[in-house]
Image (cartoon, rainbow, N blue to C red; front, side, top):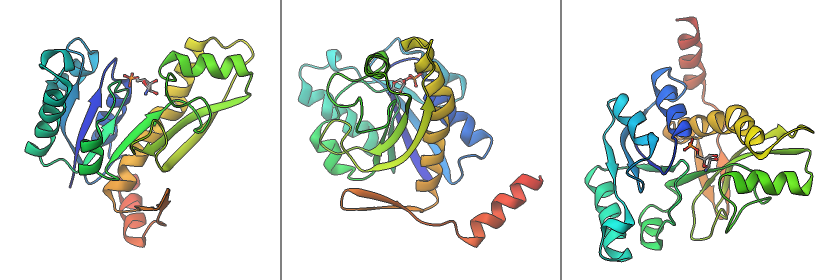
Length: 223
Ligand code: GRF
């Protein structure tokens, strides 16, 4: 059973997709051990509490310095025997010590088709503002493993979303979340939880589905 920690900063709609995915068995062999936010007021924490999941606030400004904050975050994860860290709208830079400790065990959802509209300064609505300013006809979302760069780790899943002529950054963000993010993140977690992903150098490889898993899925569908 893969133990998940989901790190959040805002509304938590991606977290909700994970909670719902575990409940409806879109995600199997995984349990949500803890939700951690840097923002005490993040609605995502309320979503966790409403689902009976431990919700922690570990905020940088509540520690004497960055190092103390990093140690507190690492300790919270180590104490809960976390297998996979999921960044779901987490706006704090992940420290190198955490990336080393959890190498290829941290994934992030980014609301564009990386390598477009990503990297420093591209987060939240700014991603969609960039896509609209460039006039792209397709955008989307990407789940990638986290390395020491910004949005530079091995890409695991991507899904394209059409840009409409009358889109605003807000309408585009909503469609990318609905049509891509909320589907890709549960799918990525299920793949990892069922041992179907390996990282080879800078590439993430998805193993074909085994017969046993296919059988299980058929059984679940006929329930
Ligand atoms: C989403 O747009 C996601 O792509 C980005 O941050 C936002 C988080 O939204 N990483 P939510 O907190 O999951 O609703």
